[in-house]
Image (cartoon, rainbow, N blue to C red; front, side, top):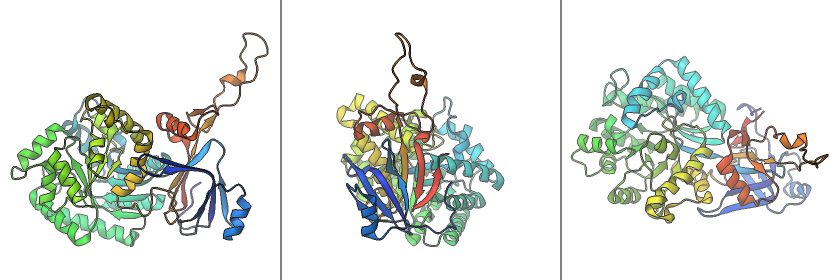
Length: 473
């Protein structure tokens, strides 16, 4: 059972093993820890090597706190941060056939997104998408909606009701889109975007959980007047921005044709005042060195979407090359170009894609378990501008967390006679997911098994800002 929004939070103690990314290369593993989360959903204290919980509660005067304990095969981990996901495309997840990007948009994406003009249809799609992402441990998501005001506003409402932290963007697109699904003008796109901003401000005035995000779909779908107006809106509101860049070679060539006055795809966004520290650029597979340097200079952020890039045969992003230049990188599922709403799958695929890149560029391109988990948590927090609030378990951060459970394999009973196996040997554990732990593994090895073998069945509970938002039954 999740905790309804209208129920006040009470102080809670989380007891057991806590694991988070200390740095890009290092996991911080705290066994026998106690974290106190206050009635505002913030971490008030962290005690390490706390053998006696009663002494901790007494020392802090928290004797009335609710207590959540882990077992020996469970651990707390920060919630995942999906920096690029199209909520409006969720019904198409896994359907990409033989398509590449531009063909896939026309064949699958635009028809589905246009159907969400119907608010009842949108309610079904968005409710399911949010339920799924929460069940996979995604506590924060940067969502693309459609260009429909009412259904985009509904997405914000559903996120707030579900308790998921979200950035909700109404797609702006007044060019190179079907006549049945595009903005009629740049002015209309800006007016509708402002309507969504006003709505989100009305339901969450401080943007404590839900924030609007300016969303030019990508440069080819926006005319220069629309890009110019979005740049002005960004300057006047200081809102974050999300878009796509250099996902596909055909797309890069199209940008070159549509914007001949620009020197690169990145420079298109820069010339309209959109390439700033609050810009999230999805994909960034086919960047030139000069584009990379411009992105670094403007402190724009990149969302790496490995599952999507493989599914649509877009290419393999050179994440090590980006990280070594000092660019901030997070991960995205990119549903439905990406086939799964699971950020754990995005973490796993980030590791595998880096190995494919390494086959051409050398072993230095490979990303470690620690690095891909960092990208899915702290890296994502930096991408969405919330690194001071989420991504780790430091005092003062908000309790965005998931309880991960692994299956501890019981000792097999001795066979009763030669050649026999006991029936117990064939029984699989229930309720703990597909990751088998035999007892000899270190915590680093347990985490690696989770990354490569785990799924939503391992996500037992999820909290956002101290509120329970998902619990596996």
